[in-house]
Structures are given as structure tokens and as C-alpha cells.
Length: 200
Image (cartoon, rainbow, N blue to C red):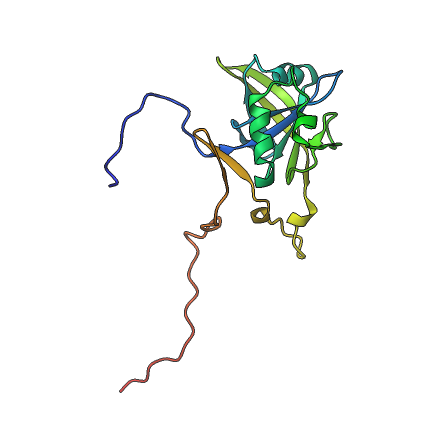
């Protein structure tokens, strides 16, 4: 029933969230991977996004040192790697080798993208805001790479072919069937063509 709701204590319930693989590197040393669910668009012009990272995480120090990172949006095929990169520390493991993911050069930044990810977004940090448990990194988008197979013959970006992952309350999901498109709720319906009934 629509009226049957329970009251919970305040918590992080804006779900589902992206299951993003963020690649980063310090000024020296190898690149690392970290799984981030708290990631989102924050501005159009200039294009900007944000990620939230706990200061204790190994990747946090790399991002602070270099001032850049890449947000890689993985597909269902990378689900196991996404979870692995979220529970294992880069201090102890080479996550690239452990997951079989491939570092790939990315325009706009010095850290690599994930070659297998359908979409990679290069970012340069503009501001770091300590919030408590996490630091919020505001970043400008420096470049975007997409898998060529996501572009159809007309040059349209077919995100529905990416089979992207999302995260909700401890579980991973693949995006499901499209329910509509922007503006479809107010679009005028086309009249049904047919023969008019004859008056008798």
C-alpha cells in the first residue's frame, strides 16, 4: 500500500548509485584502482563531477598528491573486479594484475583508464572538501573515452548497449529495461490514423 512506510534513522539512501571504478596514481609509483559508489555529476559548463573517498583509503593519498583521477563506468562483465577493488587495498595488492584489467593511456591526465570499461572520464581536482567520514573531491572533466561499439551508424551514443552496473544497499545490479526517455511524459501523442466512421 502507498501509505505503508517505515521511519529509519538518517542514512545514505540515494540509491541506486554508480558502481564506478576510479583509477588514480601518485606522482611516482604504480596506478591503483578503487571502487566508488558516491560519484555524480555536479555541473554542466564546465563539465564537472565529484567523488567521495575516505581519507584512510590508499587511493585518497594518490588523488591528493596528483590532483587527478579517472572515473571508469564498468559493465556487467567487470562486476567481480568492481567488488574486488572495493574490498582489497592497493597497499597490499596490485589490483590490475589480480583482476586482469588493463591500464590504458587517457588524454587529459597522467593516470590510466580501464581499457575494458565502456566509458572512462578523465578528471582534474579543483577542490577537496573534508566532510567527516569522507573527503569530497570536486573535479573538472578533462576528457572522455567511450567504446566504439556504443556508437551506432548515425553517430548516436547508445548507452543502452553498455550493460552498466549500479550499486544499491550492498548489492550490484545491471541496468534494466528502458522505461522512457527525457521529456516523454509531456510529449504529445500522435493521432491514430484510420478511416473515419460513416455517419448513418
